[in-house]
Length: 442
Image 1: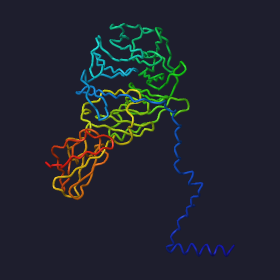
Image 2: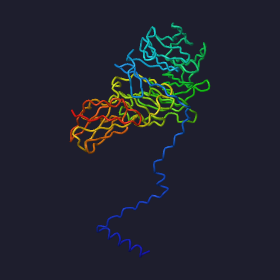
Image 3: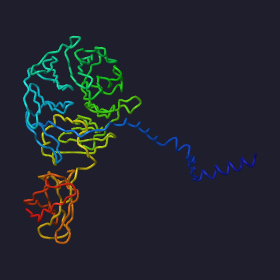
Image 4: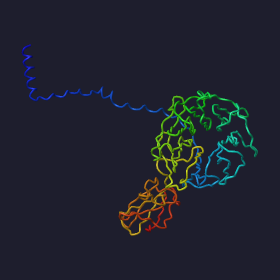
């Protein structure tokens, strides 16, 4: 006991002359503690329901100041300008209807035929039997045999939206939904909608699937009843649903975008990252889901396509598609839309040529941009841009060039030069090669 005390006194005396306290040694993490503090891996999403076989279909867009354009094999083409505002409705028979607040047009071939109508139009739907339904002046009307007939909605409340699918015609009021099969209207109550606090915002249908959004929830119609998909998601006074096949849909609210899976035990709603568009989510609208499960959206002067997992696989912008320079008022996609929208631009073949001056090491760049954006290089940010470096004799080869008119630029030294008189590349065909001859510099 005494010996221990003497050692303790000596140690205290020694530390009084400047001994520093040894820091407490921290226990080394074990495998168990590392596992507890690491970030848990997200649970894998359930698989999506398989899609039925899809056929190719058209894509239309309504552009402010431009009119109606269609996506063809070589890009967007102007069809006509019956109006530059309003909406598009694509019937199950492939007929395109265009409408604004007081007029309706039907596309026949490449010509728009005006349909006599009256009143202030707020919604349009084309039924499977070719009948056109509208809501105008707060009334439900349908066009048959050249004349409009007014339908009385059960309950007496004014209709707010009309949709049509293989089951019949859907109408919703502020708090009720009705399905017209044949000549009979059948009411379907919406869970949680009592007419006091929660409103129905929108109803959408395609094929045999129907969806609706209230001011609080998203639902799907199944076995003659509305079934909840998710609550507390819309949180506002506006929503847009784009219905798709096999339980898939897309939901747009003012600030958030979602890919939806309404199957039981499915994914429900998955947030969609729209940052690749370069546009804030407030200005992105998910307009359509095609039969291949791809979501078509607009973002300012862009049309973008996302795959089923939310990856952006296609983009058309005003730089490479000048017809998109107006505001995009709507998109309509028929059936499976165009095939082959893989990541990147659709390509066709090679372009060869040489540059005036015959020097090696010059950069040749081609794209659909006709003018250089301020403070940028030619074709910068344009998805279909192709570049090559000249070899001996000024020769170059551009691979995977997009079909359609292209503009060529050459970097000679430190300066980009525009070229003159190049006619390319609408004549390209798959795996072909076009020689543009000598690029003359401006």
